[in-house]
Image (cartoon, rainbow, N blue to C red; front, side, top):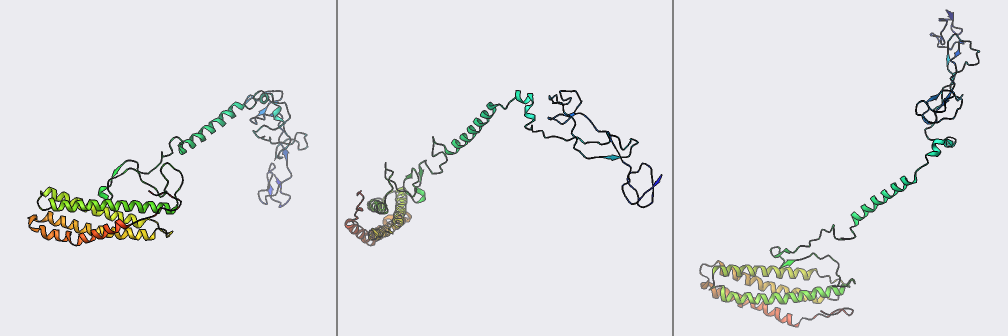
Length: 328
């Protein structure tokens, strides 16, 4: 037993630190220093004289143990003044070969294989190129198109006949990639509406003639069919008026022509409403022949007046093609 030189407490002979004041005592001794080499690949200790690592088998150059490290003190019975009184902890080197390690014969015999690099680069190009082709579809540009392409019956939706394809807002000439001007598009829209109004007027005349022939003396099935056709005709006339209203005349070139076509369309629709009501009365009457003169009076009177106004305006209507376009 001995006394602590700092606080005077009794401490054991082999104590390094005072248990009372925690002061370090001057009783030190070092563990013997380890000797040998360390494998640059895995860091294992290689015995002196060995040329291969006993752990990984890597060829190693005979080198002394590194002398850098932390001095560890301990209370042992060895002489503190002994030459080998220091214990150097081993230095763990990086697994990445340094410039000095590149002189290793193993590394010189196993260089980086360029074939692996080329194979990886080719795989990347194939993957990226395949993704681009999958998205772009150069062989089928309409692969992801959501436009309708199959003909659809639209007669029950207010549009006559069938629609083969949906048309966008672009107006390109048939077989030409030149985009038409605003006046050309307006001229074509109004010209088509003019033609459609004439066709609808002729069909309405046919409906009136059929009403006089079969509306009061025909079968119930014929009257029901005539009523259905008259109602469908009224819907088509309303759709034609909507098309005329949708024609763009912001340039002011065809504003008067558009208003004239709208006036004719309204006259035709008024006449169509009277004819459709006449068909309904004939189809619903228990004895159609008894109401013949009463029903036909409205058709021959007011409806005939609208028809006369329409035909007079239709025959005198004219529209000029734009200066840089061609008439149709």
